[in-house]
Length: 168
Image (cartoon, rainbow, N blue to C red):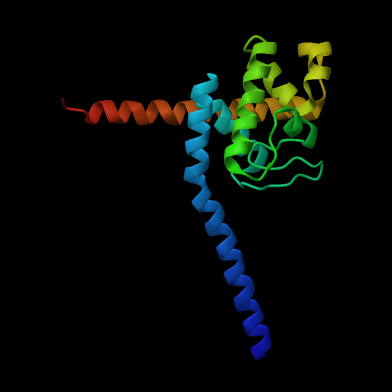
């Protein structure tokens, strides 16, 4: 009985430690997202939408297909972007935002194509464009759009509230 209690206590504390370390990295993630998004001229809400959809803000999330980190970089994409540690928040966000900036240039700022290419790869989206109707990709693009719009709306509400309180 005592062993079971101690084991349960250890598992519970390990779980809360893992959650707290992930929570503690959210401000760091937000910092790098804002810095790199501004530097590479990618809308911050768009980057945040990708991070939320790809990893749900877990710095070292690993997908079954082998993508890793906040922005879920695949090994070949990370290598192409010179990201050596995909779990490193700085490197992962830097590489992911650079990739988004490159995709935005390639697809002339069309967020639908950028989102589709981020998910399915730029090759197939380059060949098929908006004629690419894979249901998984269509759903992904829709989720990115909804999350992006939510972040844009939240930002505008915060700015509006701040302006109302500003009495200068």
